[in-house]
Length: 462
Ligand SMILES: *[C@@H]1O[C@H](CO)[C@@H](O)[C@H](O)[C@H]1NC(C)=O
Ligand SMILES: *[C@@H]1O[C@H](CO)[C@@H](O)[C@H](O)[C@H]1NC(C)=O
Image (tube, rainbow, N blue to C red; front, side):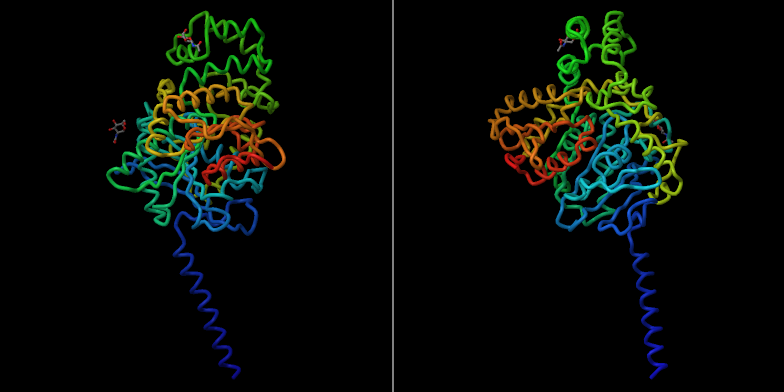
């Protein structure tokens, strides 16, 4: 009796052990067991690692994938892309905007408004040379452009589906901000073309936050934004609109030929706006210790992507920890440190001048819903430029207004304003939000994201 119960127990223990062995060997190779400092007992799974994008295996893009908090099988797949060009979707998007955690010292603090409450979130560091993504052939960092980036992003997703076959025909959305106003429409266009040969991408919509869609309109709305928010004087406003506007300055800058008149206007603008104001959110204080790097915001090289520098320091420290890199299955290839924005990538910055608003138009024509949203405190890609581009596009496509310009609510407060055209093209502002809207207004951003996925207009009442 006694010996038989011992035997039963031994067998049971063996079975349990066997079960764990099988389970761990069956576990996905990219599964993250635990990120250092993360809260215990998560309800969702995390994965990260590399997907090679060329057949010679010189280049690999790094991703971080967070399944939905509840019922991932019933929720869509959302690809998130940050801009720059050259900034990291892992460091900016996941760890300071809409991912499940934010680094704080040794720990990862839970973000209650993480977008994985609504979707399975895939963050991609792209193109090569950004974050942990690399090429072992360093000459391929030269002359990376929009076309290469879009092509690599497409191949990435095709190959990523091989790692995660359950997601292959899942509803797919692409979201992101800033220079992703180039990346996203360009990638979506390739998907639509690919689907004509082989139906793979179940693309259901794209959302673009403070996006660069048409260089001159986006950049030149800065003057009025500065002026109407009291950042520049009347006379400087006049010079900034008549003597040298911002698109002309940036064009000259990237061609290494800044004219004396533009140089004069820009130094006046910089003096008045002050380096102690964050251009990505004109109401935010700057992190004083880092004010020097902050001053680079008015430099065109920095036009597109920044977060509050104090947050940024924490992310840089966290992602450079060896134990963190090990947990993420990440490697540093050809660089000594992980950086928020790449300093080895030599991007074709004149691509900035190619409009992508027309691609957005063609996507709408092929039936893909588009949301353009603006954190309304951003002076880098101000809401006024985005709003006029959207309304111009609606007119061109002859889309009638289906939701007239009105407020929307999150809780009992106004979350921003919205307008919808032809039930397919939407514009929305997020009140009090920066260039990185989910960073500064996480609750409102989550509400916007939820409505976007549901294909519903934003809440009209509270
Ligand atoms: C490295 O990249 C450059 C530029 O893309 C290319 O011309 C060259 O053939 C590549 N070298 C190898 C060994 O693949
Ligand atoms: C900006 O400046 C360029 C070059 O001077 C000019 O062609 C363009 O019309 C200006 N745009 C605006 C909005 O003032």
